[in-house]
Length: 224
Image (tube, rainbow, N blue to C red; front, side):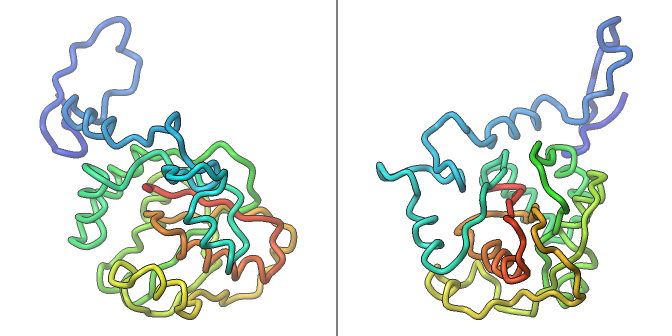
């Protein structure tokens, strides 16, 4: 008998000739259903770039229209889950309640997108916040996933973005910078962040990359 990695309840799985050599289930049926509920429905009408639910007849959603006034837009967002239900609960407990073990739960549900890139670059959080929680929420999940990445970007301490309105976030100075000079000219970058909401965070990061003449950047988010 083994236990669900999320709720730690025993998983009763009868061995048969069909599942004897198959890896054991990591989630119980109840937890698995919770994750199925928050899976992003890509068949519904969404912005082809940022996967936002479309509210107008335009090919470009209102968020992307707002962003392209200031930034070079990412070429594509990749995301499998909505930021609601079990995903919202897990990320809250992981990031803010410092439940480090939940990185393993997230890593078990996430898969890197099947797309081309030259390097994976995680969106950083300020050193002070990582030191307070004792881990970085994005890179810890990537480590559990076995993903190779480069910590190219750094960020200054700033007010929590959830406490600022959309306009205030857009008008704030760019907190990201590159500490070490690395030639990324004509490179294709895959940025990774935990939550994609308005897109301002990843586009501030993307602005720094574009200043270094990257060919384009894409974004992989744990949730949207």
